[in-house]
Image (cartoon, rainbow, N blue to C red):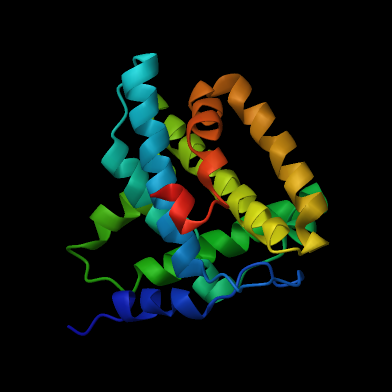
Length: 197
């Protein structure tokens, strides 16, 4: 049976992020998903090593890779629109769910349960915590984009940076891993290659 699942996912590179913002360098969904995956993995490792958690960091990375896959179908809805009010947020979640189901339907039946576990929210406390790590990684990735744009002289991302920093400060109250990542790793973003080596 021919499956379109991975060919469809390969189109993530065509989905541009930050649609309503003038960017000095465009960012696509593939780039973003890779970065979120790496950061979610790091947050889980920090949690395990420093805070005695028992998280599956590899699964966090997998969830991060696929966390925005539905945007292949829905496109990247700008945050101010997506979170404008509860009705729009709820409607978007429903559209996102339908898009995920459409993607999953492209898999052969025997493989589908493995990917459903990645795409769908789990019921265990660990699953919920992993998804919170991915959400935090998503916000950290957004902050990194804001920093990069600001350093290139683009002030378009100034208010996005401020609101993202506030959201991360709230997340860090429950997830100290977030604060650790911001302290240990964020200062290096924006440095030149010579400064990093």
